[in-house]
Structure formats: structure tokens, C-alpha cells
Image (cartoon, rainbow, N blue to C red; front, side):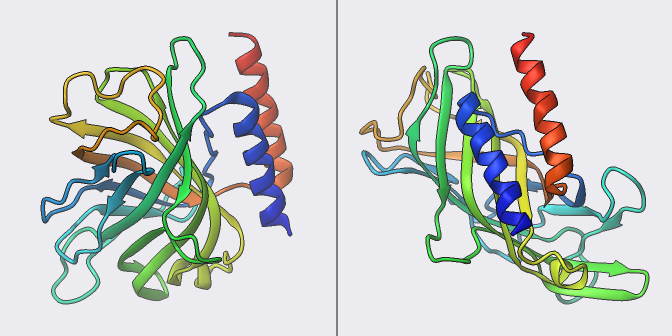
Length: 247
């Protein structure tokens, strides 16, 4: 129930401010720099169908670098690959789609909103595979899994870098199992950098229903983790509201 309440607060805040979501991650933080080693373009516009951003599972992808149980405080643990000799960094998997735009006229004139790609209830849209050596426990395999219910990409038209946020429910993973986080609200946040994007990408007030059909390489640097308890979240979002009103 508390996870649902926390997520509801974030969704209301996102709707009220038209993006970004700005999730305040406070613990069990994984840092990553995501890409597809096999060269598959991460972003696709798919004509009038929803735009998608996908980072595929691949044991050769070494994208997840560190795990902070009590972010931003020490200790921090390096993340290693799942199997074999100690190979630094784990695998990041993500699938999200953008179905519409809520961008207002003004400086923040790109704002795409959507959900996770996997629409089955409780299915994960964000996954982390790797190995973490904790003081009294080694965790190796699926470390983290989120069912993303709300995502937003936002920024200024014609740029190559955009903010990307998402919130959802922690549904699986060895870290959530070990620390009893299953069912709590989790989030991702960071920046997507389009690589060698076509000139003018993304246009102002761009809508994913635009019949553009192109595929673009995109790096996603950011973090994923757990959100604070609802009472703390209310205070944080209250401060966010004051900040926005005084701009």
C-alpha cells in the first residue's frame, strides 16, 4: 500500500507540472552508462507507432558500475559481470515507449511521456544483471528489476541531450529480496545523449505519433534505486512545488 501511495504522489506531481518527474532516489542506487555493444540503435521512432528506447540484454555489455546501499553515503560496492573471471561492470536492460507529448510552449519544449514496454502486470521493464560482493553475502544474477509505470523524456528542441525519468514498482532482483524491497516504489533518472542524430532532432513540441521513421544511437547515463517513504516524499515534492512557483 505504501508503494502505491508513493507512486501516486509522483504521478500526480508529474501531471501537475507537465514533466519532468524528478524522482528523489535515496538508497540502493545503481550507477550505469548504458549502450548496445552489438550496434543496435537504441532509439526508434517507428512511424506513427510509439517511439521506443531499448537497451538489450548482452553479457558483453559492461554498463552498471557501482552499487550504493545508502546513497549518497559510503560504502559503495563495484558491480562485476555475472559469471567467469572478475570482469568489471554489469549488464543494463531497459525497454520503454513514448506514446504522447505534454510539452508546453516555452523553453522546455520537448516532453515525451509513456510507460514501460512490457505491459504484463508485474513484468520488469528495467533489469540489472551482475555480481555484488557484500560483506556477508555475494549476490550474483538478476540484481534489480523495475516495472515502470510512468516515464518522461524532456529538454530543449534541437539538442543532443535530454533528461529521462521513470517511476514504478520494484518487482524482482537479489538486492530487493535481500533487503526486503519487493513491492516498494523505485525509479530511474539520468540523461539520454543522441549520437550522430539527424539535423534538427528533436523538433519543438515533437509528438511520438509523428510519422517519422528513423533509428538513432543513444547513450543513457544515470542511476536507478528506491524512493523514500511517502511522508518524506511529500516534503520533498512540497519543496519542489515551491521551487517551481518562485521561478
